Amino acid sequence: MEIRGIRLKKHKISKLAKGFFVLRKSENYVVPLSVGVSEQSERVVSVGDKVNEGTLLAKPKGKYGNFVYSPCCGSVVGIVRKLNINGIICDHVIIKQENREDKSYLPTMDASEFSAEKLLKRLYESGMVDNFPPYEVTYKKYLLNSSIKQLIINCTETDPYEYATSAIVQTYTSEMFEGALLFKTLCNAENIIFVFTNKQAKTIKLFKEYLKKRGLKNKVKIKIYPHIYPLSYSRLLAYYQTGKMVKENSRTAEIKVIVEGAINCYDFFHAVYNGKPAIERAVTISGNNCLRKANYFVKNGTPINHIMEVVGFNSNSYENMLIFGGIMTGVAQETPSASITLAANSLLLCDSSEFGLEKESECINCGKCVQHCPVRIHVKNVDDAFTERDFMQAKKLGVSTCLNCGVCSFVCPAKRKLAQKVQYMKNFTENRRAKNPDSSDYLLVEGEDTTMQQDFDTILDVKGGYENVKETNEQSAALEVIESLKEKKPDSIISEGGDKNE
Ligand code: SF4
Ligand code: SF4
Image (cartoon, rainbow, N blue to C red):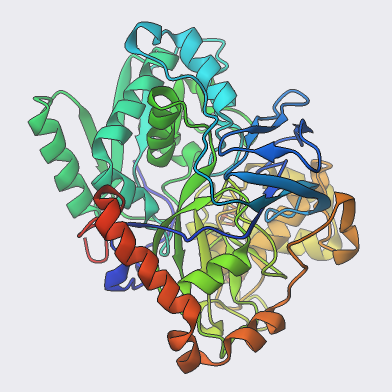
């Protein structure tokens, strides 16, 4: 079957990028009560409440809401309503962190409880959210009307800046694999298959060695695809595996397939065996302006300005440098005071050489946008329909099937903003007009905002230029954290990993 998309080079990642680091604790956490496309959850804490790591902050409201848990020990000091990092207005709970280690996790489960029903309940109450499109609550995929033939464990990575999935598979192979088996029990799938790309040689090798040690060599199916972006999108993987394409907003379960992320498998393992709810994510922090490109475990609600201070950044060129998500589809952030959500997969501190700021020019009818679109939308014609604001025509051209992968914009020699226009037409035809990010949407609901609305200049004043950054206390502190982790928690740092040149 033809694999659609484009080949992209991996972004260079420094030697320090190998494995996972744990970020130094932030003074405050600002936890959004709506993640990805989920509805806002109903807050169950108020200003003044003491919380532990894992204390419930909010419960589901509406059909597909989710449980939200405290990422740290501390006190609730304020509630603000503002844009989350995905551009959705929602309430955020501000927690002033306290140096305690108290945990209020869910009860642990043992093997006798591993029925589909009980595992679904655990998935629901864990608050897990997919960190891949369409960024929905994870349990939604498992509300099934029919049987499942294939459970696809997505270990691929085709965005040039993302490394966290490979690092999870390499470092926490056992947890990832066991988590995948829990998902298999949950959906009662006939088959389970682990998919990779041919640029993940080291990850595949380590995974195969693990299977061999367990006596599972040749008993677990592995499929290796060409390294073509955006192969890792669930709908595309399901298509490549079955030859059937599900419509946007439809679930792959309709063609008896579920696609689950390797990082979700790791998180589900801990939700089941350790009762750990969704409070953190494996995230790649990278980009030319990032001084310590690496994979980190980042707690939900961690302010980006805290991350920037810990990882260090080159402040010489800061315009448009902050991108949440991959380089192809990420959302540019106006302010570093936004906080990380559970839908995170990467945070990029980019310089202007890393993405096109060129002005649009006239279309030269080269046809590349159509040729490379993985779902074969006639993008050039959608561009014309956008100019005319002809929404009926855009609908006829199939904008509803757009994956928002960004390939059309990337390949266009005229630098036309094609993906944005297709998304605009799609949102309009589906009555899902995106909100215009506007700082006036900020509202203090309760208590005080101890996080301070910070802009880039504020941080620049603190940090100075590139050379100074390397010598700041923050940078030394980051190194200290890394050193101390090496001593105390060898499992949280690996000596090798990442997939620089797999
Ligand atoms: S039209 Fe949509 S699916 Fe096609 S290349 Fe552009 S962003 Fe990707
Ligand atoms: S890729 Fe750009 S220049 Fe080529 S046909 Fe499409 S819109 Fe026109």
